Image (cartoon, rainbow, N blue to C red; front, side, top):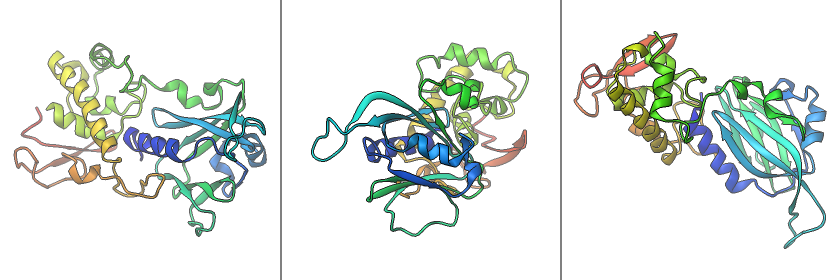
Length: 294
C-alpha cells in the first residue's frame, strides 16, 4: 500500500504537471471507484470545466483544490483559473492505486478505473488492480470531512509542527500494545505504514514488540527523529516500489534498494551483519535486527 512518501511523491508530480489546465471531461470505467457523488455522471459534471489550483496531501489522501475556469484573464492561449472555488477532487490510492499522466493515444491498461481529460493533449488515469482505491468530488461549500469521512480520523502529520516528541509520547506511553502496532494506527501518526514503521524502529534501535508503556523518554525522542528522517529519505528516493507503486510518470520508487530492514528477511543487517528477522504483529509483517534493536 502506498504510504506517506509514495503519496507525497505523487502529489509533487501532480503539482508539476496538472495545474491550471481545464478538465474537459472524463470516463468512469468502474463505478464503485467513485465514492461521491454516487452517480458517475454527477461526479464528472462536478469537475468538468474546472482546473486544479493545487494538490494537497493529508495522511495518505490526495486533495485537489478546484477553481472555475473563465474565458477572461487568458494569457498566451491558456485559460487562467478565477477565484471562485469549485470544490475538491479527492483521491485515496489504497493498496494498488496509481495516478498516471498520459497521452490519450496510449493504450488503456486493463485495470484503468477512471480517466480525466485535460484537453486533447493529456489525461490523468486512475489505475487500480485491487479496486480498493476511491475518488470523490466534494461540492463547493461542503466540508471535506463530511464527505471524505476518513479525514476526520487522522492524527497529525509527521511533518506538521504539532508532531512533537511530547505529542508522540502522549500517544504511545499509555498504550499497552506493541509500538509497531501503535505506529500503524492512523489516529496516532497520519500516513505512516508498515514499511516506514519498520525502518524508523530500526534506526531508533527499538524492537517492534516493545510495549508503548515500556518506552523510555530517550527511545521516544530517537523514534520521533527517525520517523521524520526515514520519511524524508524515502521522498528524496521517490518512494518505494515493491509491487505496484509508480509515480505520475510511470517511474518506480528507489527507496527499496537502500531499505535498512523492510523486505530483507535473512539478509545481513547493513550495520552489524546479523540476519534480518521477521515476525508478525496484528497480522502484519515486521522486520528487525535482533542485535541492533533492543
